[in-house]
Length: 308
Image (cartoon, rainbow, N blue to C red; front, top):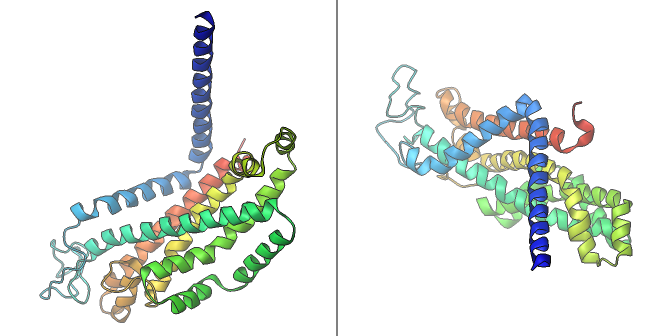
């Protein structure tokens, strides 16, 4: 009974120590992250966009594809002839700009999440293999990645979408493939760096299997730069998806995607500035906020960049 009581007490102490360690790590991370004011602003803007995307079906004043034929190219409410019914105005077929922007946030964030998930998962897996097995296999993998990186990213995405066919799903697949080499190269470099560490040698001497070494020993110590890259790739995915939508190869009308909205409004640049400017500002603010967050993550996760 005494032994069981001692073991239970020892287990509770270990759990408490783990919780304290996690809370201290999070506190340290937030301290360095919050030192970058731009990153904090970017975080709040990003959270606001996420909130808008979640509540869009309930908060949007109109449906994203509802057309009001008696209200074509109505200006924003603060301009002459503006209406409170359409706060940010309407487009050429009478659709509410504010509602389409709110629904567009859902599409843009969904695109970024799916693209980064696919690119990061595949890139980390391939990078781990290329970094751990540095023979012929690793060389072949890296030469393939070099070939992909030799092409301009948007041009390669355009070619792939042209082959697969226009559409949002095909555009996301193409962008994910284009972004994948960055994760492969970054993961491979981190793995090669970690392989020379003493803890990896100790794990090998202790008889750890290859899978255990890769997944449990090396991978957790390679995630910091990958997380920063994922954040920056999120904004790149949104930009590339908007570019493909603008060229007619991404989301197809009447989908309320910001790039598609820009494409539909090209001929009204001089007559109705709000139809083009507002989706462009939405893309600009979103990408800027995510990039600022990426800078803050880099400062918080890289000890060399931390301010004393």
